Length: 349
Ligand code: A2P
View 1 (cartoon, rainbow, N blue to C red):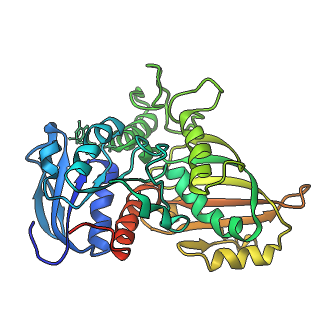
View 2 (cartoon, rainbow, N blue to C red):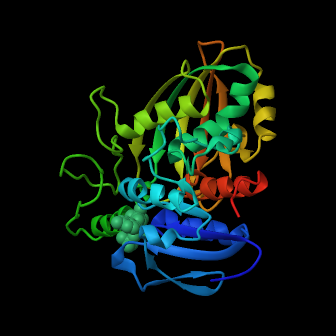
View 3 (cartoon, protein in one colour):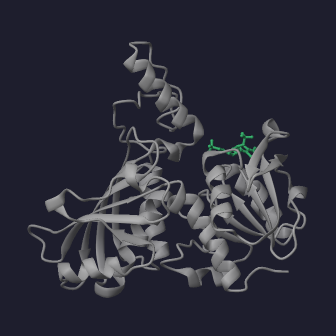
């Protein structure tokens, strides 16, 4: 696909769950494209994907594929990013990487545009997209942190299977059908950990996302801790997470408890959130209005509700934060970074 007046863009992992949404976001946002390359593994070469009604043929992601590319969106796993993002950057591309490969690299900005867009000015060819659970949480907490300061965050997540990729979505469908028909339930994908042991996801909740670390937390949980500190540029903020996989296809939900530094007013909290970019407040207990994954699916906003004061801690606040993990949690945040790069004139001609 070649056009004038726009940017040369590549999507790496274009056949995957997030890659597909990246293409959808570029399409929906009418991102100014001069050309679009869709890259994946050698296995998918020759397959096609549809973009703006046009069939695009998948090419293999190789170092040479990035010649002439100005923006490369990566979502093909950490090892692919580690290998190919430096190659793409060497060839002049700015890589927006959705994997965890570079997130904690001090030379790589970790960006949520509603929180720290200025960080991308310091990029050296790679900008990291945070973990899905971190993105929606910090986007919703930023207006409160800015106003009152924030001491501590305790979060429990209820995460959709799409976060583990297209195969995990298929597994949930297959297992659900197997249970309903009384057939044998095959367990092959979840949880994604270091052991071969797998568990049934259908009609279950699995308190493990990613591998366990020596401190008893999982890697996903520690990502939320470390990434939040980095995005907020605040090593003193206390962050503890419990990450749980639930049988939902799209949309992560989070029960978040925060302790603010200063006294707050609940009505003011509501109004700060209502006026925050990308945030939608859905909070009316009388009418049973609150955010739900099923409603947040396919939307780019982050939804907040169940706002309530802690019963004991005067500066404690409880909330429920929901967003589409493939969109704000991945593809939309990445395309939003690309839009911000354009706005800030950071893309090389
Ligand atoms: P492929 O379909 O060719 O395997 P998901 O997260 O949904 O599982 O998707 C993973 C994405 O990463 C897919 O697009 C997949 O392409 C891509 N991918 C996996 N391994 C590689 C690789 N070695 N090189 C390039 N892309 C890869």
